[in-house]
Image 1: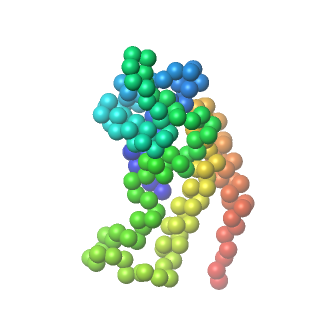
Image 2: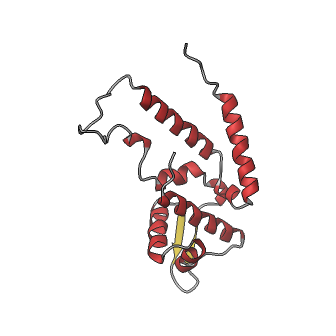
Image 3: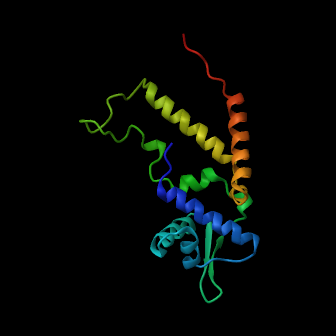
Length: 162
């Protein structure tokens, strides 16, 4: 699975807001952009997308800024990625890089099953991680991810086709 720049930086901006939530403060667009090394325009685009989706709220004025619309503990990563994803699995096979306009494998395609299955595994793993869990140390986040992967590998045994 490839994470787009929009997904990565949108998620990073949300982590900044989750950190600010712990201090009961909001962040200006300039603060978010500076903390993530983004242009204000790019950060503004991300905040617009996240605000439109209901993850971020904006307050105007001198005491204004951006904050999470819901607690970080209620925001799951699969929701964030779905909002920021520019290329969903639903588009797989609908566009085609070959010489024809559409893929010739409209039924009984083993490749599609693999791609859709992998997407499902990733989405299930992301649904178990909240934005609040990303605020901790990298070591703690990594340990949490390994727990999820280990649990999922026990839940979905691979069948062998002979």
